[in-house]
Length: 267
Ligand code: NAD
Image 1 (cartoon, rainbow, N blue to C red):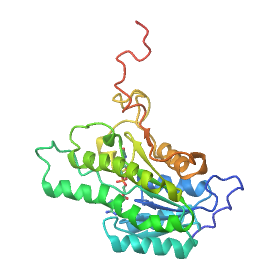
Image 2: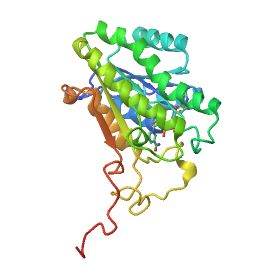
Image 3: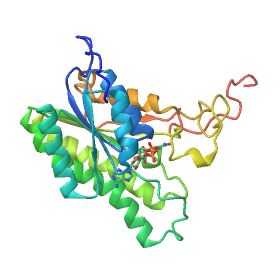
Image 4: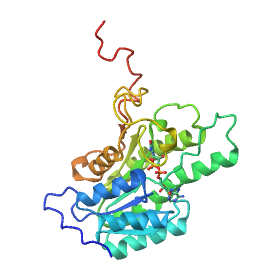
């Protein structure tokens, strides 16, 4: 039984917007779905993981729906748009979040099959989402698309041949779509999470809190909600003049290396 979701306040930034979030069954997608719903949106979350996805939708309440969806399938994408339109009467936003890491391999050791698989999900999946959802956004007079890339799409991160190539591709595709779709009032931006605690990164065993991740100037891993806040901003009218942008939410990881003496006491 799905709990009724309280009506959003009149000033909720995504009040009554209809938003699709892929990879919504866990991790960053689940956090984005929760945050968008808390900001007033109706949310269709999609994923391969049916049980987890239904559970997330159930926790959000009756403003959320779940649909099984493989982002590499054009048929599935058509079904997602049809489902969102039937459930909500419109589509205003898309969060292209679903992805896999594909593991860590030096470029000479990644197999062609693994490379193709990660590019198929992490890049072609985003392309198919754009292709399929844009007509619905145009039909409403505009909308917002947020593509979840990575810090690995802003720098050359060793061991990420397929993943990094896909995430750089997402960053480029975002700018191409932003330029092409601006006249249709469809904004397209990319978010670049750094190291965030989710099921994708849990096996790395990075400790929480200050000092847990010294690779970043802020010295810690991020929380899924910190990415979700950036996603909600880009979906909302607060970002009305923002398109083609790349928003790093990474504790400063891609800004530069952490200073050896962060407080510079002995300068
Ligand atoms: P996650 O593994 O916890 O969640 C990803 C979700 O995507 C899963 O629920 C999975 O089932 C789903 N998914 C995978 N393949 C799919 C497919 N073909 N069709 C539909 N759904 C599919 O990972 P996460 O950390 O929440 O990552 C979410 C996004 O953020 C990914 O694109 C990832 O590359 C990106 N990202 C994550 C981090 C991080 O540190 N966690 C950093 C940078 C970027």
